[in-house]
Image 1 (tube, one colour):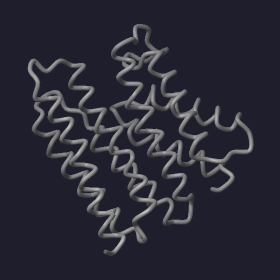
Image 2 (spheres, helix red, strand yellow):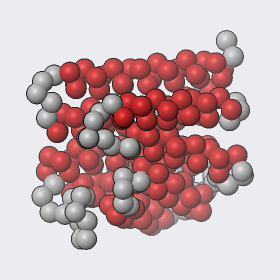
Image 3 (cartoon, one colour):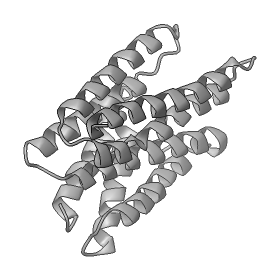
Length: 212
């Protein structure tokens, strides 16, 4: 079977698997805010692993772009059905991947940079949101939404992702990327951090990563 077709099939399985888990969590009543957030972030974290499908299966940008456009449209209509408690992060996330792919195809960056941006956003934002909801009491300076402990979680998880994925000259470069990422995640308004954070990680990895 053609690798690109395999990539589409694997993508569908990945999305269906984590989407199914989220639906099972949401079906249990009463649906608390915490359970709703867990369901949303499971999708967030799980789908970020799509990077490995992208990196290993797709040989041209056309197929992954089609997958991401489909994800964007589906997520948009899903959010429309959620009533007043909408969160457009699931719509913004595939858009951010599209932008990273566009930068790569334009000659700015590599597939590995996409991995750092995608996995950094997926795991850091997903885990930090749950930690912040559970334990976050004190808010970041001038931020009514993000807790200090949640932002520290973004820093730590982004650091772990970059150290595993990338190759940098010094650890200070990684710490700088993590610090900037933490600030963008904490202070980007309107839920647009799902776009700004992966793009910031991507661009800074292009600048600092040895293989970029």
